[in-house]
Length: 93
Image (cartoon, rainbow, N blue to C red; front, side, top):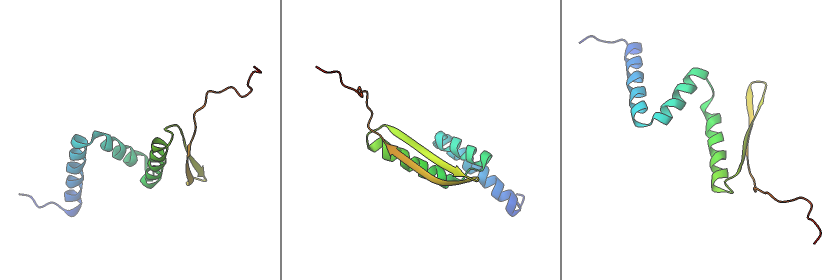
């Protein structure tokens, strides 16, 4: 059996881990792969997911906004919204 260098062993372990995640949780694998490809900070996505959950357990309708300034995420906000379909001006009866 060949002795692998630290870097080779690390690369092999990473490959095995990714294959395992791809089989067990393909949706997580897609996110991991996209994070690796883009370099996007996963902690920003964590905050987006929290805001999505807050909306889902609230009215179930709203929006999540990520404010980016000078290549930095400076704010993640979720707005739980009451969905309406009402006339603004009511007709006199």
